[in-house]
Image 1 (tube, rainbow, N blue to C red):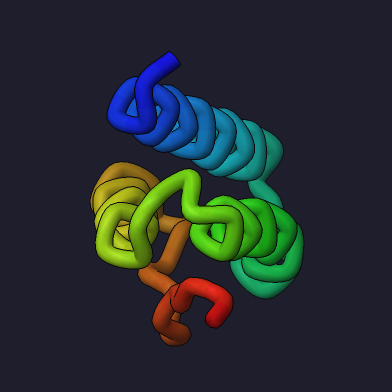
Image 2 (cartoon, rainbow, N blue to C red; image 1 turned 180 degrees about the vertical axis):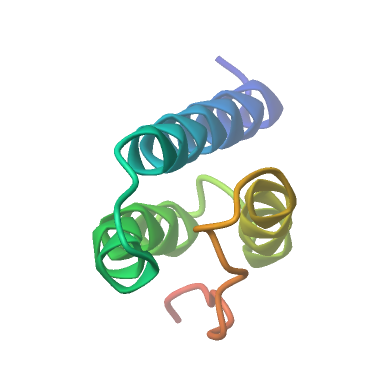
Length: 85
């Protein structure tokens, strides 16, 4: 698998999981504060992907921004994803 293919695959998986979680929270009418805490686990997975160089920080931010446009419980992350040195 090429690096480009791995990056695209990782981004698709993260985006799909984020959408699935957001959709489930919406359908369950979970309060925004609780939804935010539950979405934190998805943000940690995203940070790990950036740290492992599976996706870029810019791509991670773009995934979260796109999810925020589709789902009211998802807010763009305030922190910037950074690679480990």
